[in-house]
Each structure stands twice: as C-alpha cells, then as structure tokens.
Amino acid sequence: MAACFCCFRCFPWRAGFGSGHVPLKEIPSVVLDTSHMGNDVVIVKSGRRICGTGGGLGNAPLVQDKAYFEIKLQSTGVWGVGLATRKSNLSRVPLGECAESWVMRSDGTVCHAGEPLHKPTLDVAEGDLIGVTYDHMELNFYKNGESLQIPVSGIKGTLYPAVYVDEGAILDVQFSEFYHTPPSGFDKIMFEQSLL
Image (tube, rainbow, N blue to C red):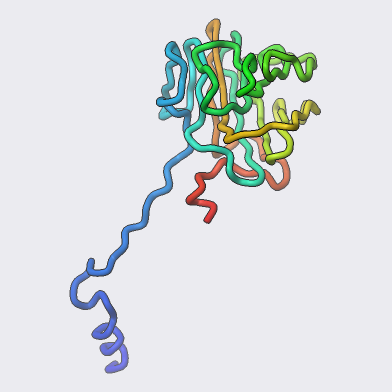
C-alpha cells in the first residue's frame, strides 16, 4: 500500500489536478468551406449540402496519399464534382472551364481548362452516389460504387474537393461515413495535423 501512495505522492499532478495539463486539440471535420464558395451558393446541413448557383470547396486540401469522398444527388439539375485549387472562380458555373479545376459534370463529361477530357454517357437519377478518388497521380470517378473508368492525370497544385450546382441541383457531400466502401487503400480526407 505504501508503494501505491508513493506513486500518487510523486506523480506530477498531485499538487493540483490541472498543473502541467496540456489540452488536446480537437481535429475539425472536413466540410464545405463557407469562406470558399460562389456568391449565389447556399451551404447548409453543417457544411454537407450545397444548393443555389455556383461552386464550393472543401475546407481541407488533399494532402494524404489516397483520398476519397462522395456526393449524393438529392435533386437533379446541372452539377459537377471533382477537384479545384483556391484560384478557381466559384461563382462561375460550370467548373472545369478554367485551368484550376478538374470536374465531372452532370452529363458525364470530365472537363479541365474548358476542354473535355472524357465524354462517357452518364445516366444519373436522384439518390445516385458519385465517388471521387485521388492519389496525387490520378483522379477517378465512381457511380454507385462502380468505377466509371475515366481517369484524369497530370493534376498539379494544392487541391480541394470541389462541387458546383445550378438549375435546381442539390448535392449532399460525404467526407466520412460513406454510403459505399472506398476502393482499396483509399480513405476519408484528413487534415494535415491528423496525418502526423
């Protein structure tokens, strides 16, 4: 018993429960960033739903090796999902017109710098899920868990998840707690602090 008492007596916190205490910082959630969105965009549901007209970026850059996120189409219209830098004009739709964004649009066309990179036929309906993977070499898209086989490479810069809406489209963005299991090796987007 004396040995136990000695441990408590010598322990640094015996003089007061708080001395030397370092509070842990809570790592924020990845959501749509209300400081990086178009002028006519509305972001609701704690940063997980976008509606209105324009684009929005996630609040965390893609710094990990293999990142995944997905959108759920809540209401049809004109929309897009992909990656962009903070230099993108988020008030101008559709994204993919400038050199700062790589986006798959609602018709399936993948665009960058105003040029179509892929033109697959994409038939989507309300409730469909579009997944996005990026591994710093290739951007890929998925529909309801199945790869669309339209890879995009040669992407450079500090990239953020990007979405845009127009003509009544409403998208819910999932940065965690996914509907579909991410492809092997891919995981939710993480803040740089959480990678350390």
